[in-house]
Image 1 (cartoon, rainbow, N blue to C red):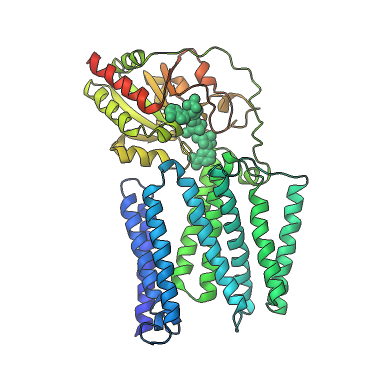
Image 2 (spheres, rainbow, N blue to C red):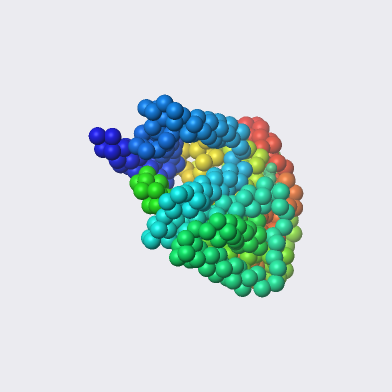
Length: 467
Ligand code: NAP
């Protein structure tokens, strides 16, 4: 009866995870998706307490075995409390770091499961031992790699660390770690072998992540996310826990697809991200012609107030400035004057895919006004004004024209093809890739300098005056 209850609950958990993930694919249903997946997680955790033979679970019914229960409750209260607090205080622009931390936790937890299994009185053998070992290797790499990724994104570690013959060194390192794993599976988990294996696997995560530059970090985090899913799935098989297997497979598959999508959107094959990172010194060779021309907030307001169609391109700068509410306020004013306003979202605008969609949705922008790159690019030549707010790399035309540029081949939003382009940014700061932007020097581009929120507020004032 109890096993029916547990397996039935796991089936419900699996359905909730899959439905949750499906719902997260659209901004309209994303909140619902989070709630479903969260409910699944609560159910999966609660069911753990019912598993027979599980000290923590039996403690409910068997007094005297309560130490595990106390530990479980402390761990849940600590983990849940810290996560709830972080969820409230972490800014949208710091989300990649947050994801890195969660990835690291998942990978580390999977590796710990394997460590406990190999140190137990009845260590896994045969297929179970092989899978536990692979899960431990991937989990350790995901854990230490995520810690380093967090340090880079948080600005704690400022530079990528590279050394000669790094790729060859990493191959040799991987082979030694695998050899240790094989020795444990074949000869049994001798403590020295187990400690050496885990140490090598953890260092491997650091060695693989350290040469990768900041620009590629979100892609790496997504890859580590896929690794975490795989490690959790493998350890779920070792423990015979269906919820872990399903959650691991779902996370692994989603992480793999996201990694591919991001690499494609930046036109960087995954092999380049991992083994031929952007050095940071890369600069576009082609000399950029023209000069930057400044405009006032009144000029910008007039251009948009008397336009028929305005396309807004939000970027990372809009996110850090928290200008989305002002942007929507301006949109509504322009629409009241009969101007058609659309939003163009690049797949890697901001610091994570979906970053801009979430911000605009939070500000109340209707979903049918938000368009992906493929949907809107053909509209730019017909638009009167493209208003670029704190975006840089994702509208840089050198990606189309300059083969020597590190962003050459990255699909961009064709803001330069609109009749007029207005760029709001604070000064001459470069984008994420650190290169000059030819759009800012184009004849049809004018720069409105200022922090996004204040600049848009000034434009709003003038649009009101003109109305
Ligand atoms: P971006 O290229 O980083 O440019 C942001 C611009 O915003 C900067 O030029 C900066 O110029 C301006 N800015 C900063 N603070 C501002 C403020 N308070 N008000 C107004 N402007 C401000 O951003 P993006 O165009 O969104 O491009 C995203 C970049 O991230 C791309 O290089 C992409 O490849 C990379 N990336 C994204 C992902 C992803 O998944 N999303 C993954 C990997 C890499 P000033 O300093 O002059 O103001």
